[in-house]
Image (cartoon, rainbow, N blue to C red; front, side, top):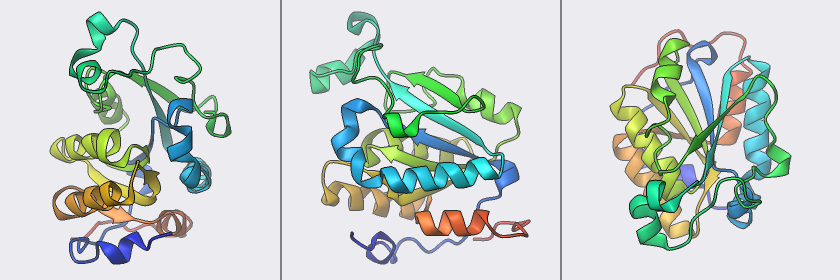
Length: 206
């Protein structure tokens, strides 16, 4: 596997650690429709979920789907001509990643997990200030959500080896763009290591 942190080191220069008491985990669209793309990162995503769960962090699984394309398809349907329909097998979460009772499932019909979902209000209600982002596709739903999170003043930790898309070229392009202006690009080992530390960083630093 490509060493993503090395590949993007020129832009990934801002340093910080997530604080479990202020942080939530987003698992973006790990659904049957994307299983072939998501398969290489499933192990890393599970490791992060288990680590965050051990810290009693909020874990949110997003699930992309359309109920009526004439009403909720919009430009996505026009652009792709191939949509995930709500309630179908393709729409279901990958079985290895089934949420537990304390986890949340957020249904969406746009790239951005904040769009029309109430996510921002829910996070602010529980005083979340930071997000860890995993899932698919790196350059569509994950990146769009990360950019909007940054604009909403969340500190974003984007996991380079727990996100995936159709080509490595697109994956690296997103990581470079996000590192430049929106997110701390981190690895699964870093996230799990930080969460395992006894003393959390009280103040993140640039």
